[in-house]
Length: 190
Image (cartoon, rainbow, N blue to C red):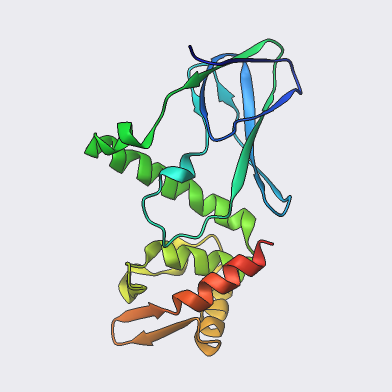
């Protein structure tokens, strides 16, 4: 039998790694990091929508995502959520669904990075997202417009990353110093 959670306005509930279908009402979700930092999602979720920690479905362990706990807060009285079995096996069995879910996660993870890190960390995290498993990016794929910063700010930080040896350039490729980047990202969200 599925677990049902009933919340009144302003009441909160931790999802404990589970997914819930919103049967009635509206909620807002937020990720709470180990450090205590809270990252709120700007959109409310309504009846018929699913809430949960979708980041855990990312198959790529190159992307550093800190441990988070998802908390929801009811925006209306008598909000009702029902536990929803949304396992990775369901996604892995359907290649098209898997691609859609991963693309949506990557889109939202960039917003997550923007709130989680300083500008330097944000750019490093997004570069890791673009890189292949060896930390290589084709230069032509990277443009300041891919980042949520001004052109001058991007190129200033990008040149600093080269000087600090976070990245290097050769011919048509950019190479990431993945270990150094991981250490910086781990330290910056503590």
